[in-house]
Image 1: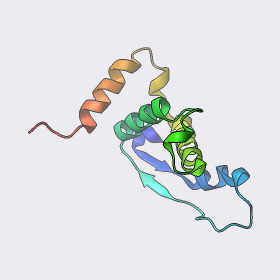
Image 2: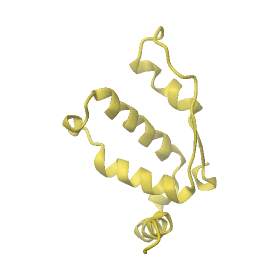
Image 3: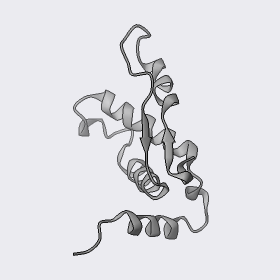
Length: 102
Protein backbone atom coordinates (compact mmCIF):
# COMPACT_ATOMS: atom_id res chain seq x y z
CA UNK A 1 0.00 0.00 0.00
CA UNK A 2 2.91 2.38 0.69
CA UNK A 3 4.09 1.83 -2.82
CA UNK A 4 0.87 3.43 -3.98
CA UNK A 5 1.57 6.31 -1.66
CA UNK A 6 -1.40 5.77 0.65
CA UNK A 7 -1.10 4.60 4.22
CA UNK A 8 -4.22 3.78 6.13
CA UNK A 9 -3.70 3.79 9.86
CA UNK A 10 -7.00 2.28 10.94
CA UNK A 11 -4.93 -0.53 12.44
CA UNK A 12 -2.53 1.95 14.04
CA UNK A 13 -4.95 2.98 16.79
CA UNK A 14 -6.00 -0.62 17.38
CA UNK A 15 -2.37 -1.77 17.46
CA UNK A 16 -1.59 0.42 20.44
CA UNK A 17 -4.65 -0.65 22.43
CA UNK A 18 -2.52 -3.05 24.41
CA UNK A 19 -0.58 -0.08 25.73
CA UNK A 20 -3.65 1.87 26.80
CA UNK A 21 -6.59 1.26 29.01
CA UNK A 22 -9.64 0.25 27.02
CA UNK A 23 -11.64 2.96 28.79
CA UNK A 24 -9.44 5.85 27.62
CA UNK A 25 -10.65 8.15 24.87
CA UNK A 26 -8.81 7.65 21.57
CA UNK A 27 -9.38 8.39 17.92
CA UNK A 28 -10.73 5.36 16.09
CA UNK A 29 -8.53 5.87 13.05
CA UNK A 30 -6.33 8.33 11.26
CA UNK A 31 -5.54 8.28 7.56
CA UNK A 32 -2.31 9.81 6.33
CA UNK A 33 -1.42 10.06 2.66
CA UNK A 34 2.24 9.90 1.74
CA UNK A 35 3.97 9.26 -1.53
CA UNK A 36 5.93 6.03 -1.66
CA UNK A 37 9.12 8.12 -1.59
CA UNK A 38 7.97 10.04 1.49
CA UNK A 39 7.06 6.81 3.26
CA UNK A 40 10.46 5.30 2.50
CA UNK A 41 12.38 8.39 3.66
CA UNK A 42 10.29 8.59 6.85
CA UNK A 43 10.74 4.87 7.52
CA UNK A 44 14.51 5.16 7.17
CA UNK A 45 14.64 8.21 9.44
CA UNK A 46 12.56 6.47 12.10
CA UNK A 47 14.67 3.32 11.83
CA UNK A 48 17.83 5.32 12.47
CA UNK A 49 16.54 7.67 15.17
CA UNK A 50 13.96 5.96 17.36
CA UNK A 51 15.88 3.36 19.32
CA UNK A 52 15.40 1.51 22.56
CA UNK A 53 17.72 3.89 24.39
CA UNK A 54 16.45 7.13 22.84
CA UNK A 55 13.87 7.74 25.60
CA UNK A 56 15.75 10.80 26.87
CA UNK A 57 15.04 12.50 23.51
CA UNK A 58 11.30 12.57 24.28
CA UNK A 59 9.20 14.56 26.72
CA UNK A 60 7.15 11.44 27.41
CA UNK A 61 7.63 7.76 26.58
CA UNK A 62 4.25 7.86 24.79
CA UNK A 63 5.93 9.88 22.02
CA UNK A 64 8.53 7.15 21.59
CA UNK A 65 5.80 4.49 21.55
CA UNK A 66 3.79 6.40 18.93
CA UNK A 67 6.87 6.66 16.69
CA UNK A 68 7.68 2.96 17.19
CA UNK A 69 4.12 2.12 16.16
CA UNK A 70 4.37 4.39 13.13
CA UNK A 71 7.66 2.77 12.16
CA UNK A 72 6.13 -0.69 12.53
CA UNK A 73 3.13 0.29 10.41
CA UNK A 74 5.40 1.66 7.69
CA UNK A 75 7.58 -1.45 7.85
CA UNK A 76 4.54 -3.67 7.22
CA UNK A 77 4.17 -1.99 3.81
CA UNK A 78 7.81 -1.58 2.82
CA UNK A 79 9.37 -3.69 0.10
CA UNK A 80 12.38 -1.52 -0.74
CA UNK A 81 14.41 -2.28 2.44
CA UNK A 82 14.68 -5.89 1.29
CA UNK A 83 16.03 -5.01 -2.14
CA UNK A 84 19.69 -5.52 -2.91
CA UNK A 85 19.88 -1.98 -4.29
CA UNK A 86 18.19 -0.41 -1.23
CA UNK A 87 20.84 2.28 -0.81
CA UNK A 88 20.28 3.43 -4.38
CA UNK A 89 16.47 3.27 -4.06
CA UNK A 90 16.63 5.29 -0.83
CA UNK A 91 19.00 7.85 -2.36
CA UNK A 92 16.70 8.33 -5.35
CA UNK A 93 13.65 8.64 -3.08
CA UNK A 94 15.42 11.28 -0.97
CA UNK A 95 16.26 13.18 -4.15
CA UNK A 96 12.62 13.22 -5.22
CA UNK A 97 11.38 14.31 -1.78
CA UNK A 98 14.03 16.98 -1.20
CA UNK A 99 13.11 20.62 -1.90
CA UNK A 100 14.50 21.86 -5.22
CA UNK A 101 17.79 23.73 -4.99
CA UNK A 102 17.37 27.51 -5.30
